[in-house]
Length: 80
Image (cartoon, rainbow, N blue to C red):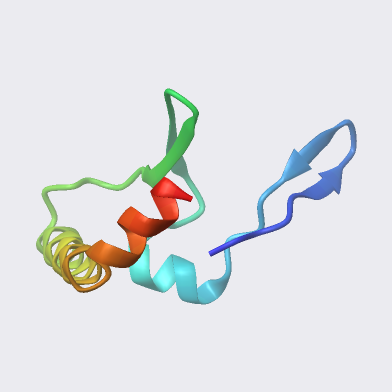
């Protein structure tokens, strides 16, 4: 998914849609990590709560399915 940053004063902001929040469980507070050239945003909620554990498992399963299904496409894009 490609997103455009919005100007916010002297900074730029990324708009997180309602659908993205529902899929990830992100609330009004997040954890932000910089890993190499990637910015990773995760919910700042207690990861041990059952609903969060279930949501994380669903997300991981969906991610794995997409990576498996489109493996060849991703490899061709990486080689382009």
